[in-house]
Image (cartoon, rainbow, N blue to C red):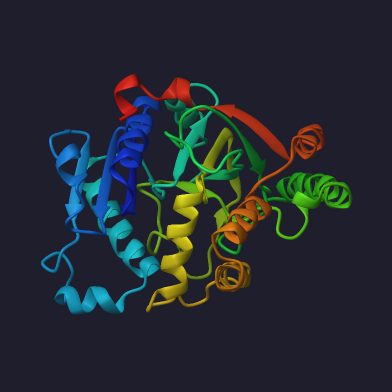
Amino acid sequence: MATLCTVTTLDCPVEVLTTWVSYHLNIGVDHMFLFFDNPEHPGISSVAENARITPVRCDSEYWPGGSAKRERLTLHERQWFNANKALQWARERGFDWIAHIDSDELIYFDGNLKLGLDAIPNSVEVARLRVLEFIPRQLEYEHPFAGTHWFRVGPKRPARKARPSSVHEWILCLAEMASYYGRLGVAKLICPGARGPFLRGHTGGKSLVRVTADIKGMGVHLPAPPDGRFFRNYFLPRAAILHYDCGSFCYWMEKWMQRTSEKNVPRGRDAKRKRQAARFSATMKSEGLPGLYRLYFREYGLRDWEIRILSGLRLVRRIHVSSRIPPTGLA
């Protein structure tokens, strides 16, 4: 059967790390390359003895040019560097596929992941994962990945690096997009929670990259194809990336406190993220904690009646994740 490894640059709480790792190893991921952005992360020792995990302490000795070089890099640049190092290791170890994911994302497959990988046509170099975005129903969760949750359903649209490769695929792609955005247009007329950007986080999803593929390098969402080329726009059936963009109020607070104070802002940060940062800063300054509670649910939450309508429009989906997490993974 095909083998799959993942690469992640992370600095998440230990309890999140434990559940996240257990989930992926349990569903069929063969190996995980974990680059700890904080070299003193307390979770390093908890995974160091696992033969299916390669933990990397990203300290001054790791970065070419030392800690001064690291301080000049944005998070995305550090992610790219680490992902390409993991790709090199994956090739040396003979893995078939590699996925670049974050510690707030779960690879989801409705069925046996290994059989799904084996069914990918040999001509496909990159298999895309549609994004499903977590909808919080309360302020905090003891285990953010555990339980049965609702998710906003993202689009399956082509990208600059991945396009339909035939007229037939273009027709199917355009029909899919017309259906999705038509249903979304109806939703925006009815549901306040669907207005504005429907997904609060990224819309591009993630991808599984064939280790033998001809690529210029790994990326955050898609790898970079050789000059003048693009990848076939192939979405893996029954698969998704579950994105817990802000899985709890405390995580949301910490995330945006960091983003509004960071020194190295990623070049090309999209306008949606800039507006989110501006709303967070303005609300924190003018309304304090009560205002941030309201903003959190306004940004990410949906009312019960909205979920019923959006479910009927196939724009939200209910997924039970706990069954895929072994009891030892709930630290």
